[in-house]
Amino acid sequence: MKVVAFDESAMTVDVQPIVKCPDEDAFQSKPQILSVPVALVFGGGFVFRPVYKSGDIGAVLYLDRDSDAAIAGGGESNPNTERLHSGDDAVFIGGIRAGSKQISGLPSGTLCAGTETGSVYFAIGNDGITIKGNITITGSVEVSTDVTAAGVSLMNHTHTGDSGGTTSSPN
Image (cartoon, rainbow, N blue to C red):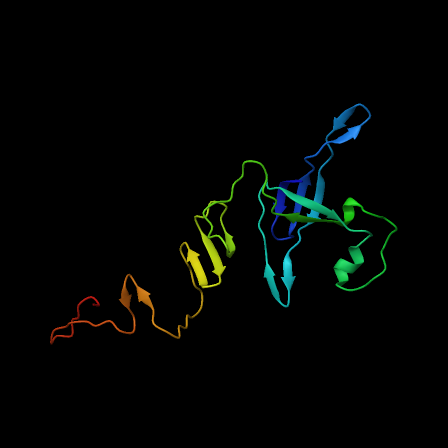
C-alpha cells in the first residue's frame, strides 16, 4: 500500500493498493482505502509515533471482525456487525523500504530513530547513546559526571584573570 495522505492528528492514512488484482482477462487497480488507523508502538504511558508522507509504503492488516467497539472502548466487546476482513477494520503498518529508497548513514547494530539519509539520528547501542543533529531541550539537564565541550572539561577547566575581575576563555 502506498500512502496518499496522512492525518497526524487523527493518526490515519489514506492508502492506494499498489498491487493490481485480476479481473477476468486483465489486471485492475483497486480503489483507495480511506482513513485507515495507523499502528503505533504504544503502551505503559509511552508512545513511538511514526510520521508518514505521500509515497511511503506499508501494509494494511485486516482484522478478523468488526473492531470498532473494541478499539473505541479499549477492551473486550461484541462486534457491532457481522463483517469479516473488511477495509473498515484495517490497520496500517508502515515502514516497508521499497525499490530504490535506501536507508543510509545510520550506525549499524543500534536501535535507531533518524532520517532515511542519516543526517539526523538518535541511536542506542551496547556502549551508549549517540545523537547526530541539533538538539533543543525544554527543561533542565542533570549530569552526574563531567561534561566536555570542544575538548574543554566543565569540571576541570581553569581561567586566568586580572585583578579587575576579567577572566580569559577556559583552558
